[in-house]
Image (cartoon, rainbow, N blue to C red; front, side):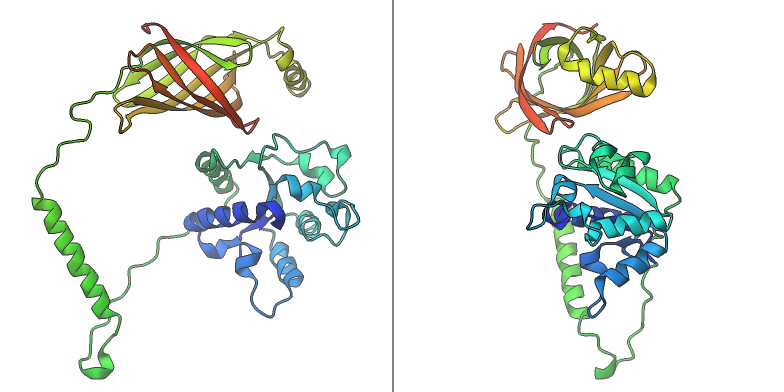
Length: 345
């Protein structure tokens, strides 16, 4: 029986649910992942089949998209307030069966809505540890989910056993019609491999070009009215980014977050810092481009607050970089310029 059950609102969650089922199925095996559009057999009543699956106490992965909670019926009433709403029935059955629930925040939802705004059983979502599932950072978010699922005891599928060779018995009865195409493919691959081995050496596209070394301190506006000095250190094509602590104790744009931090941890958040890992590459026009997975962390403590991406192109003289910065919490991007200040120590 399936171990992982994906619950979603078709209006805005179908594509993400399909992609998630594909990625989890590749690791844990398709038989362990239940997705209604793939796993409901013809002639089976969908609600009965889903109910039987949930009774096995799988891990319920609930895709919290805007429409999952905000969708309304033709009379303008919230669908999750209707006891017959399919998503509500799935969540209710899962909780009643003692299934482990993992809310996955999608499409800009940073936290589950306040419990007071939600009908039962959704008012209990805050009781469960949630994870982000962002299109922009899909690979990293899925990897984090996989780690949590393995910690819950979900076991990756064993690799398939190699096929057993069946000798031909000769004659028409023993012939396999699919063998000829396979042999043809094998011959083509062998020819391609031979060509690859003797083909003339092609000079690398970047043989005459070298990436601009971006090891230095760079002044950047990573948020409105915030100038931050970032240290970039380059080793080959690898990049590391860091910053000194940035004081946010008197900033209005951080007031609400600092209040929430204080209420949840009984401590003050007075400073943040930036860190990141990434790469440099040379694009066809010869320019150097940096691409960095960016993270905002508490300082001190190093607890992750937000993440995103910084991508920029180095100017010809190496003095500036222009590009964009993406925020996962805001699900938005804006232009950014970095100005070289001095070489990094």
